[in-house]
Every structure is written in C-alpha cells, then in structure tokens.
Length: 253
Image (cartoon, rainbow, N blue to C red; front, side, top):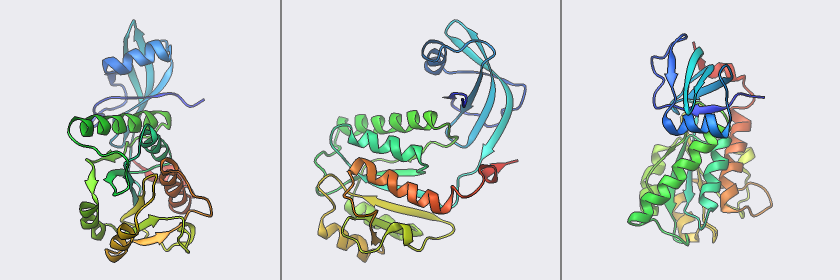
C-alpha cells in the first residue's frame, strides 16, 4: 500500500536527514485517524511540487518526520485549467475532488448565467474555502506533490478576457459534433476546459466564448453532471498528454 501523504507549509531546502515537525492538525490526523506509530513510512508535501518521504516519530499527538528522500516535481506541460461553473449543494466540492484526483492544475470558479447559486459577501469566502479544502483533501488522497490553484469566482465577462491567454480553450457541451478525444492539442502552454452549471451553458455564453477563440467539444453521447464533466475532461487530456509517459520524467534531479 502507498504510504499516506500529509501537508506541511514549505519543503523548499529540506534535505535527507532533516526532521520535519508536522503542523498540529496534520499531526493529530496522523496519530489519531491514521493511528501511525514510530517507524512507519509516510510522504509529506507542500502542494508546490516538493515531496519528501520519511519515517514517523510519534510522541502523543506530536509527529515528526525523519526525511529519507526528497524530490521536486515539475508542473506538467501543458497545464490544465478548468473554468468550473458554480454548482448547488456539495456538487461543487465533488467536482473539485474529482478534478484534483485526475490532475487539474488550476480551477477558476465561474458565475454562469444559469448557476443556481452565486458567491457574494461572506458566502464567497466560505465557498472558496470549501473548494480549497476539497482540493487539499483530494491532493492528499491521490498522493500528489502539487495542489491545484483555485481563484476567486469570476464573471462571464472576466472569463472572456482570460481566453486569449490560454493556448487552447474548449467548451464542454453535449451537442458538439467534435469530441475532445479527437481535438488538436498543443504540446505546451495552458489548456482550458469550460464546464457549465446544472442548467447548462446558455447559447449566448457559448457564442461569446467561441467568438473569443474557444472550441465547442463533447465528451460522448451522455449528458454528464456538472460535478463530473470537468474530471472526465481532464482525464481525456491526461490520457492523451500525460499518462503515457513515465512519472519519473517530471522529477527534477
């Protein structure tokens, strides 16, 4: 079984032989929930590409890691950004969880015209925190060195202004004639996927995104939930651009 992964604030400069004290919350999780004991192997990461492996030293609720190996993992190129429309209930957090597991690099919450919920005032901060916590939990579960960046929620107008900055942008839409699996993909840069809300992307939004340079593509014959479409889309991109390569190619030595 792969050792568990826990977070620390920063691993830059850490070397073999160093000892790292886990933050209070992570230490309690290791000691109480994971029931780790001294000598067990675990990973620690900072969510910014640094990951270390070591042996736990458990003293009550305090856990220190005796580092035995360190690696710096580069961001894949191209990177994957998902513009995820705001969704009701826990569908948003589920979308973040699934996308993180399959390797999304950046997530931009989108206040689409048909989004049932909107992030305003205190709700915006609370909702963003929930998405960030979902991403962190999924990063730990999938043992990744990088945690996706999640921005503040943007309007359609603000998303339109970003599209020229992406190397390629695809709108996921069930009525599209051309599949994402067959689309021409860049070999480097930043690929963006746009995922609509439960009610779908409006015709006006699709037209505006296309005018800005986005391409409309499908993920098959099924109409997918807003919480699943982004993960499937990132999975398609990962299959074509990442998963055929050995993981060691992304490790800086």
